[in-house]
Image: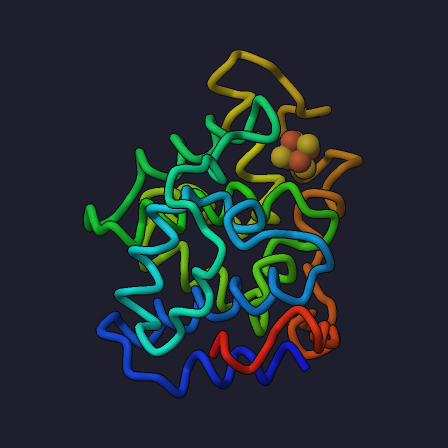
Length: 206
Ligand code: SF4
């Protein structure tokens, strides 16, 4: 199970903060459980950044880097909005940590997924994502004081910056899209639900 990949990653002794290690282990296990997706593409990270992340947080898992050339461009944007979302996140980074740069790339890339963002990040629950935002992008977390769905909130922020009005009403309370923007982001944690591709995650990786 993908959950086992997560457990093996977390059983090591990386030097990073435990919550950050949890966030990265969730995202890595999530990508490894997806057929045909490379870690760099799935995380939106350059090969250099992935190597630095693994070296700092999962030094016991050098197999995660096998096959990387360290000269590729896994962080090349897949949509025109992706760099804008990265920039929005980094503009509100809390402490200037390199982890915030990595997370900005990962969150922007996983935001392209079809599920709730917390699910596509492989997290346990939406509370994990809110914790990530409060810890690393506090300014944005405070702007989302009404707890709008995170992807809706990100893209509304980007649209407002461009002067694009996407809201159907000047007042959320009377807007017909209220449930769309603020409804519960419930669901099953995909990391638990998804089987690992047994052949694509050899034990030598972790
Ligand atoms: S509920 Fe309506 S007004 Fe409020 S953010 Fe959503 S679209 Fe905009």
